[in-house]
Amino acid sequence: MSEEVERNKNNKKDIEGLTSKFFQAGLVFSLAIAGLFLALGLSVSLGVTDIQLKTVWDSIFAFDSGVTNHQVIRELRLPRAFGAALVGSFLAVSGAVMQGLTRNPLASPSIMGVTHGAAFALIIGLVFFPSMTNLGMTISAFIGAGLAVLIVFGVGSFSKGGLTPVKLALAGVAVGGMLSSLSSAISLHFQVAKQMSFWYAGGLTATDWLSVKILLVVGLAGLTLALFLSRAVTILSLGEDVSKGLGQNTFVVKSLGIVVVFLLTGAAVSVAGTVGFVGLVIPHMTRALVGTDYRLIIPVSAVLGGLLLVLSDIGARLVNAPFETPVGAITACIGVPFFLYLARGEGRGME
Image 1: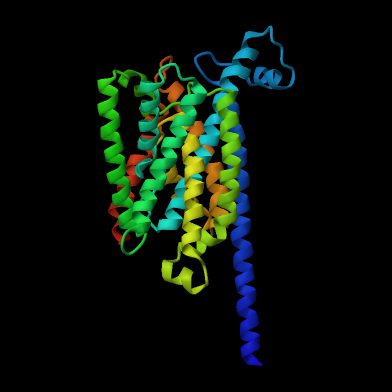
Image 2: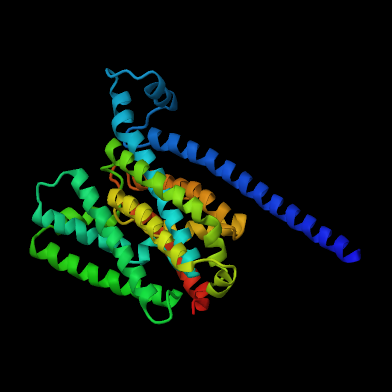
C-alpha cells in the first residue's frame, strides 16, 4: 500500500514538473512572438529613410499605389522583414535538430558544409548558365546545400561505428573545405568572384515576394516534419543505446532529420546566403530557457531564431548608415564569442 502511495506521489510530481515546463515554454514563446512582431514593425519602419509606423499600418490595410512609401513598404521592406524572420527560424530549427541528432553542442548549419555546398552549386550555375534568373539561382543553391548535407551525414553514418559527434564534425569540415576550395578556384578562373562576394557575406537585400513564397512552401514541410520528429529527437539526444533500448529505429530518425536539415537550411541559404551562427546560438539559448524536450525546443527556437535575424538585419542597415553591412557580419559578432565559449567548455565532451 505504501509503495502505491509513493508511486502516486512520484507520478504527481512528474505531472507537476511537466506542466511547469510547458507553462514556462508557453510564456517564453508568447514573449518571443510579441518581440518578433515588434521587431518586424521596426524592420519595416527603419532604413535609409525612416517611415512612421502609422504609414506602415496604412500601407498594409489601406494601400495606395500613388504613395511612394506604400510601394517601398509593400515591395521592398515587407518581403525583406518576413524573409529575415523565416530564414532565422529555419536556421535555428536546423541547428536544434542537428545538435539533437548528433549530441554535438557545436553542430550548426554554418559549420557543417551546407553553405559551402550552396555556394558551389551557385557558382556552377553562374558559370554555365550566366543568364540564369533569381529563381534559378535560388533553386541551384538549394540543391547544392541539400547535396552537401547528404554527403556530410552519409560519410558520418556509413563509416565504421556510425554517426558520432566527432565524425560528423570532421566530415563537415572536410566536405566544406573541399567545396570551398573548388568554389574559389572556379570563381577566380571564370571571373565570377565579384558576383559571389555579397552572397558569401550574407544578406537579405535581394529578398522579394517570390523568395518569401519559396521559403514558406519549403519551410512548412520542413517545420512540420521537425515537429513530428521532436519526441524522437529528444529520445535520441539521450544517447544511441538509450534510444535503441526504447525500441526506436535510429536510422529512420536520423534519415528524416537529414531531410529536415536539407529542407530548412537549403531554403535559408538559397535566399540569404552565408548567415552563420544562428543555428548554433539559438538552440543553446532555448535549452537554457525551456529545458531539453525538443517538443518545446523546436517551436521556441523557430521564434527566437526569427527574432534574432530580424534584429540583426535592422542592425545591418543602421550600424553604418546609409551603407549596408552584411547581416552575416552582425550574426558573426554575436556567434563567434559564443562558439569559442562552447569549444572551450561543452565542446570537450564531444567524444
